Image (cartoon, rainbow, N blue to C red):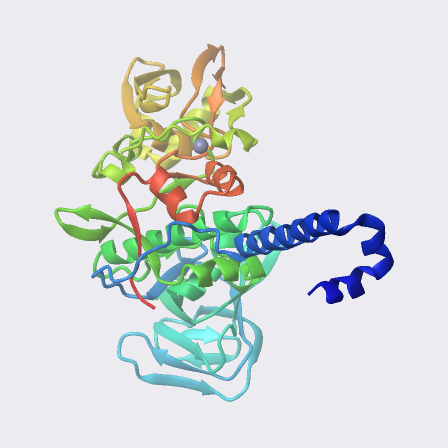
Length: 439
Ligand SMILES: [Zn+2]
């Protein structure tokens, strides 16, 4: 051993330093190498200390129906199919059209009294499913204020005729759907563990929506923030795909009378300090433990909406926007006074009384009031109201969104601090468990 070290260090070195110091140096070198290896193993170890467990006994259906471009039928929408495809009747499965070649963007419209036209092709059915040969071949040009924006989707496309318009629904496997949700919901800068947390919450949300969908409804979720933002293939970057794949089949469950059950994993951008019980948000919801609120969270202080500035809205605008959504409120005339009727412990308006110029009044849930006035005008229901002549002033705003369940900015801070996605979900949905329901 010595001759080897001698060779390494050189006999001159050994002679210069002496035997004892040399032994100390060798010992220090070995110790450093050992510690270094341990650190390397530590870095390479998966960060999620608490792993999801499988074998939940819960069975789910994985085919998801996503209504594109809102509930209302649309006119003059363009679609393309970038591979060969077939079209069948959605109800009877009867083949109604076959194409060996792709088609470019073509207007889809109701055809006369019966049928659907796609460009110059006429389909003899009012409810069809377009099935491409290759995945990710459906293109729908969504009309926006900036013109048509083409979105590519995996899976199949259902086109239903409703009167003079058409409804478009993407039929897609839940894992493919999630690829297109995460980047619709989270900025790219968020931590990978936050993406995993979001993947499990979004998967649970959509599978729960599918489970409770009423018979006859032809979609499970919408493609916008009314359900979850779904942007299709354009959202499939590496961080989103990795988060979905790393949590494949994992959902949040809670123990309902000895049965593990899915629940509606509500989430919102910024709770502002305290989560809200679900029945204050929607009166009909069951206040189960994971959604019972009162989870303290100051981790969302990083959000630009942790606190928001005063907003002035004219009384005329408030009246118009409320009546648009709740036509029965028209009977009270112009809204001149707003009175919060109940508030949570941290100041969220649970119910609000609207008083008209003639003294008549109506009461709305705080969240319904907020969404009617504008979800981006009033970032949350946590505000003070002042009367300023022809205007209402909403001040001392806290948080963004309904504040039920998971807080996305809080999740990001927790993830950056080193918490695993399983632990983050357990923190925001108390009493819940993460389990894999399919491989
Ligand atoms: Zn929060």
